Amino acid sequence: MKADLPSAPTTAELATLRRPSWQTGVGVLAAAAIILWSAQATEFSLAALLDGIPNITDFIGRMFPPDLSILPTAVTLMGETLAIAVIGTAIGVVLALPWALLGARSVFDQAWLHHAARTSINVTRAIPELMWALLFVSAVGLGPLAGTLAIVVGSAAGMARLFADIFETMDMRAWEAAAAAGATRSQRISWVLLPQSVPTVASYTLLVLDGNVRAASLLGIVGAGGIGMELTQQLRLFEYGNVLTIVLVVLVVVVTLDRVASYLRKKLL
Image (cartoon, rainbow, N blue to C red; front, top):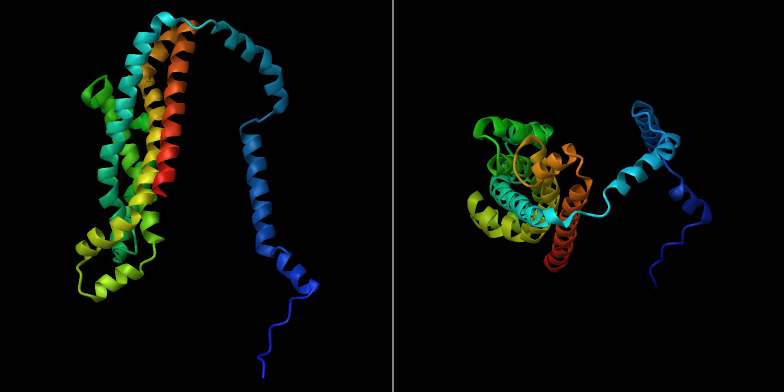
């Protein structure tokens, strides 16, 4: 005797499944209210933007043609900016991993430890990197060291938040099996957790590096080294041809790094 097969859902049942719940409706209304409030608070206006297009066109027109005499200086300073981003990201990863492990509930289930780690991460992330740069400029003086330290702190906190979420959402069956076999917590972290998460962690690290190159380009505004210092100086001197050359150098490096990072992420995942 054949088992009874489940009947196909009726049109009414399918319509019920597609009908949004009241929670979804409330969420949509809340999101719309927040967007409208944000538009009002920021005085967002398409009319004002359209009226300002001639000024934008005039500003861009002043940049042409680019002055290539500053190109060697721009390339050198962009190399310094890239070095700030690379070393800052590398040290940030080293600091972020243990910080994230403490903040992952699946690794350390002590509530006080989890909340303390998460709170410290959020407090550090709440401070913009420009503020960290100003702090380190006052501590170590003008130059790339201040920018590097700012990137280290910002990257460590940002990646600790990402890595903690990665650790908490991983499949923990292998972790539990290792625990049942008598492995210590440090052994489970070294043999199970980190090897499983390496591809995702590496992918996010490349993404953070890409963002840090752009961030390091701006830290020079407060004297934290890199190409941002030269960009600020040329803007103050109204040397718009030099400004365009600097922007083009930054653009080439950012686009190239993005392509390389995208390629590596595809290989890792």
